[in-house]
Image 1 (cartoon, rainbow, N blue to C red):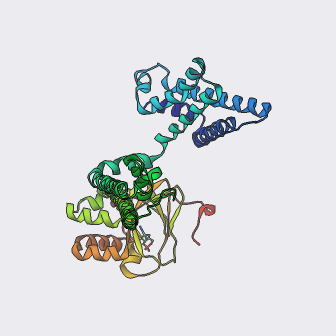
Image 2: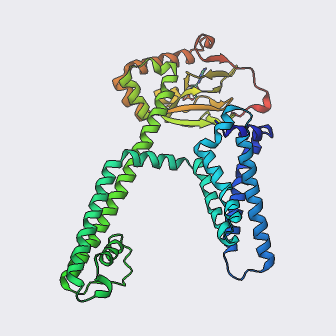
Image 3: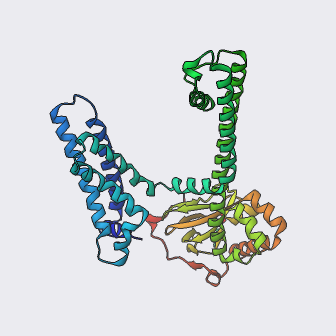
Length: 388
Ligand code: CMP
């Protein structure tokens, strides 16, 4: 990725600086936009005027510097940066203002082009890409509603033109004027500057207002459903990958994996996070998709790696948690709630049998090294213990 070039340089400063750099970027963007707004206020003092100009030039300098680093022609990918969407946005943020100043556009007008800096936020907003996909997928229903909107708009404008133009030529004297009224009424903006006076005109207006609510209700419904199904689809694909990455689960047949994918919830945890505490009640079990956890049992803690599971004792017999379990590194777990476990194992008893077999092995102090993904952990130092 071309942006990695700048990211690589920031990473050289240390991982924590990366977040700080992003915050600085947003702060500079906000300062630039504020300065642009101040510049348009009539009668600001010369000192304030000078400072806003300085701030604007500093912001422009910063964005130009970023563009230079990202597009520095040291390798092929960097050269191509300017031809990517992000590269084009970076160019738009830097070039138009100096060009406008050069061709003699007044300073206050030229700096209004700083509003293009906002486009730099677009690649960082994942919701925009999601919105694009939703609009693409829901294009047909959206187009139908749009046509419906046009239909009502045209019908209302023509009806009001016929009914009102003789009585109110100032507001309904032409079809474009009636169309303007129809748009403001249909979008429920309705300024009240043009109101039908005939009874029939008012009946039409009432119908138009009701249709307006209906059209916007439909639009909201289509977009909300589109967003929800897009989220579900994305979660399904992500969970499917995770479920099939757990060897214990990947042996199940496809319909079973699909069923489980809908049931499992993903949990991303940082290093040294306590997942379950000894003595607490438990209503779920965990599959380790990646990472590692440590089960604090006597005489020696046990480490469970990717592909293993824990928390099944509480699920099988409703007893309190028998041990504290904590991550030893950043880990991704899949949570299966007790109700889902019961529902799933009713159709797929082989999973219940496998879980019960492993639980029996653990309770009987088996040779854990023989199980894939499980190794005895090094003994913890006393001050690291957390068995409250
Ligand atoms: P549960 O008792 O629900 O919560 C703690 C979990 O630690 C427990 O379920 C098991 O999944 C796991 N566990 C307990 N004892 C052992 C052991 N000896 N070896 C591996 N895992 C264990």
